[in-house]
Image 1 (cartoon, rainbow, N blue to C red):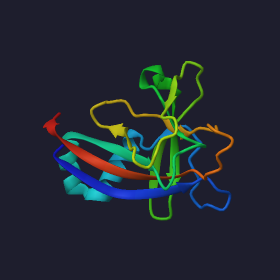
Image 2: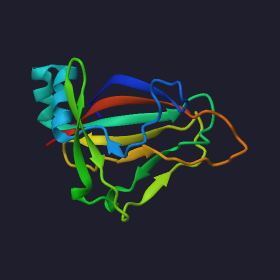
Image 3: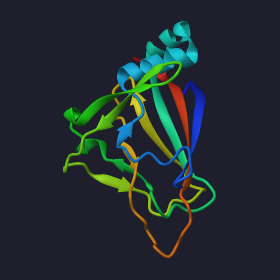
Length: 169
């Protein structure tokens, strides 16, 4: 990597009173248009053009906070099991900007994976957009409880980054 910009984070708590619950819609965080707009928003037009001329990607860094994940673990769909037509463009409207993510239509061919009982010492890094075509990873909180005798609340933090790689297009 040549450069990494860390630009936001979200703490998610699986509790009725939480403002930011785990996302239970299957998605990837950026469409192509959404990624380009976000890059300009983060870096400015001139610097974003420099990055666009090279290989860059948005990467999510995710980990549990405070306790092992027992409920609502983060699940991923294996990219090779996703058909291109499964992706759906979804607009996100904010007070100061408009974004766009990729939702995913259900398909019985999707192959799900997750890390059982992930601990705060473990971190998941996954691609949410790549301008050179590396697969975006569809992800979602899974509606499951691993051990019904454990009653910890699922708490996690996700940090979004944009990275520029040394190799060029």
